[in-house]
View 1: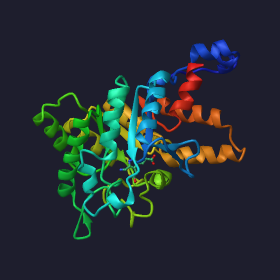
View 2 (view 1 turned 30 degrees about the vertical axis):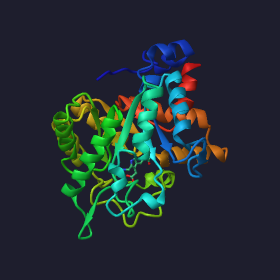
View 3 (view 1 turned 90 degrees about the vertical axis):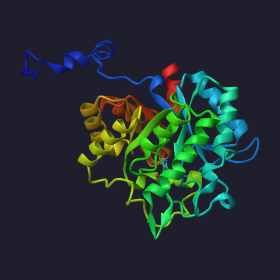
View 4 (view 1 turned 180 degrees about the vertical axis):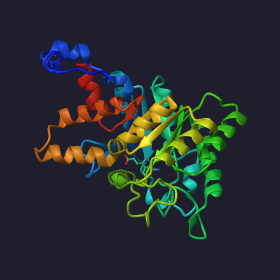
Length: 330
Ligand code: PBG
């Protein structure tokens, strides 16, 4: 513990000018910290707005390739792909999720062939594909864990074969990490990474994302039987330790800002690459307040991201990624 007393100790001395503040700064944000989630839609040369996520668009494959090139140019290390599946392709069993020619797989192939040097991350979960909007398969009114894992393993295989670099299971089924890792070993794809959403909470902050992928109207009931209770902390430690033991290369805490305590505890206890996901609702809140003139968009955005670094995160998934990169590259 550092003990100091006034007047010999005057903490303001270190804050008196920009250069002293620069010298004593403990944390910083860099372009290398950013993962940019992108939404893809069917069609050609088209984009559509997402009303609850200002400045975020769904892009058709040809245009998302341009976004990937832009990300690469800005120095963003990786992008993540989320699909808006056409309503007529959504079924009870989420079959489109394991179709090797689904929107995500076609997108990954296009990006990998045209922008080879950017990391591509794919979400592993069935919610974009199920008619009920749940992340898993339902048996007797309950999201069946092991049945769902079979589908997730197939989905992972398709995405890995399409060229995805890192699989990011966001489904919160028990044991899915080891099942996916075993599959990758068996199929001789040991270098495909797994970034596990280990501590993913049943959160109200995902609302705008569900608009973006078009699952809002499908979803009946909540996701509380698999996503975590916002009241819990110790349980997150258990989830993280299991996923690390099962073969995850890195983990995610989600949402971000309301769960900074979890990021701090995970990084302190595990010293393992840990990413914060600044989710759609956090993005929407900042934009909504800024749109009303109540907050300064740029300053709030930068402060919200620096907070994750201070809490110990290795990096951040954020829809602000290109805006932040432009500022950092200035
Ligand atoms: C789906 C998934 C969700 C998000 C990422 N993957 C939504 C959910 O679990 O309902 C949320 C992302 C965001 O809100 O930005 N498994």
